[in-house]
Length: 275
Ligand code: ATP
Image 1 (tube, protein in one colour):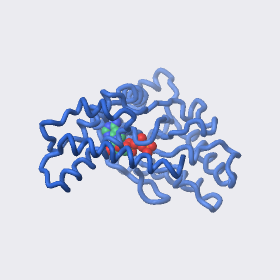
Image 2: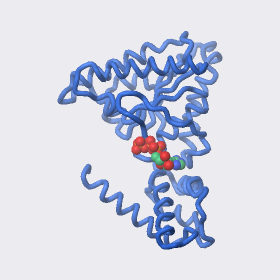
Image 3: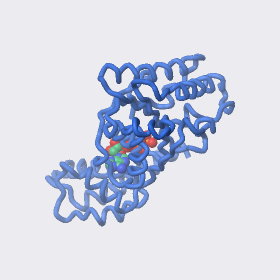
Image 4: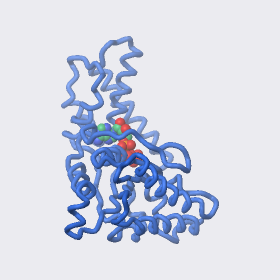
């Protein structure tokens, strides 16, 4: 969910209410962010400023949404990049991009008169994999080292407070240096939604879609065990497309059942090449 190659994209901030389910993750993330919101109090008590939060969980569960909500919650400037954007053939380019995004975050916050900036890095395992394990390991290592240098360089006295939010579905691949105190020292799990969560996500994405009276979202939530938020969003969209194709003005139970099969099938096809 990021833009362009090389430079960081900005995504529209959203509210935590736009995220379905994930009650525990939302609470934990907000608690961590309160240190940023009340940084004066935290400093008074001698609490070390929080520099990094790692969101861990399967694809499509709302990690990017969480990071965007974190930015509105703290009224921070928000910059987003993907780990793969830092991986380049030429030595030093990745490290340079890391420096660039940190500088960009500080500059943009100053320009907009904000006291904090959040840098979101998706696919952390690509940039933050264990050092010395890659074929072209020198370049990867330089990039990761630069990220560590930049995070260590975040000072409590700065006018703009920086926070890095990383997301990954493979925390086991991360270099342990990233997880040391003062770096990504908080981890928030963003798992597949449970039935209640799926129901909530379905409600959010059903907004603005005319559902037929026979549609029962509770039942649909029960039948979509294992679906991520992204799957559920896609399910409702597919059902709407089917309704349109069949000339119906409302989305009915049969469109939804057909769409469930379609999403399940697409999932199998998607998985084949990589697993
Ligand atoms: P990836 O690891 O693939 O980057 P992610 O965990 O960052 O995935 P998002 O990009 O946040 O997932 O979610 C993709 C889309 O799926 C969202 O734009 C939204 O439409 C939908 N979605 C996912 N989770 C939720 C949720 N909890 N509530 C509402 N919508 C969701």
